[in-house]
Length: 474
Image (cartoon, rainbow, N blue to C red):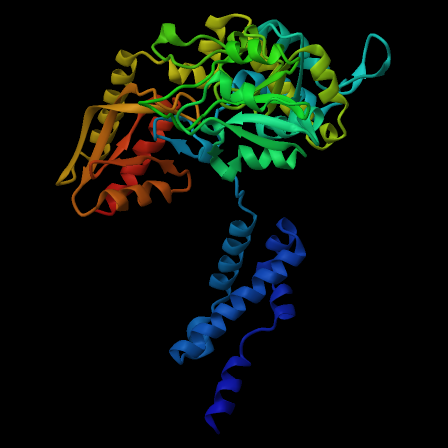
């Protein structure tokens, strides 16, 4: 018999897909998983068996075992249907971590959101008049009370809010902006491109580091629609600098009957300076300068869900509400329910700090952080204490607000720094990151460091469990 014939005869002893599907061992999988996915997984496992037979010149009987094959199909199905979006442990100390979902939401609001999600609601129904209403009516009164604005609305994110406002108020006309504020933030979101996408014409004034009132005044003409001021979010220009504040811009614009629109970015709803976290203007403070509209994110310093919040003068907000793009950017009912619960917390600032995870983390006392760091160090020592050449020490460090908020503010914290013989810092980082419940830490001075500022209560157990698994590899 020729080699080719022997090979074909060998492979022919593999069961066919239909034959495998009729096996009793396969029936539980067909009952638990969609048949189409089971068939695909069977084919993939068969292909893997054939590849091994050919690569290692083995007999089918040496490779194929029905129980092992079925187990492989089941593992494949579980992997294919496993959630892609999953919980992780944030041990980085970056509170508003863009890559890790930004601000965690308050657990106390989940029941309220569940009620809205699983039942009908008055999303766009006015219960007083019995007629159709607007979905942001449900949070407008709260936003006006908290910010001092005349009117408010909400869209899906702050980039959308800026685009909508510019489209509604400046399409076909000029928007004046300082060169020092023409920023790019995460996701290649560039202010100049947003202005153009909004149908407006960009008019730059000043220089990167210095812009004066006269720079704005020189370019105002009959084509000018508004002046745009942008919070610089992720960076600061220091040294020989000059910028025009909101109040001064409002005074200048008023002489020409122009509105000032301010993109505040992260949007701080309360003064955090009493907690040692300062440097960010509150939304109310900006509104009080007289700007026409302020836009900001709901999921950064506000500590809520992803949303773009628009507050300001009633006449301007009404124009924005009527723009056709508003429908494309509208907020959904679950986000609205979460946002309402978050905003209600701000009616009592002590409650906001206690119940909103973002504010609670940012305002944690240093003594409490040290206590938590010592707790984590103790757990690690109990798991790795028998290992040779490991150390876990508590040391001073710095946390970050993240999310483009408070870019220059260094928030003191206490870290737990881990070193293990046989593992580089990058290898340790990969080990913790690759767990079923990933632990995301950071590397500092060739050590893996955990910052308790961003750890939840049950995260300590997860890190301890990871250390137990690490011990088995030593």
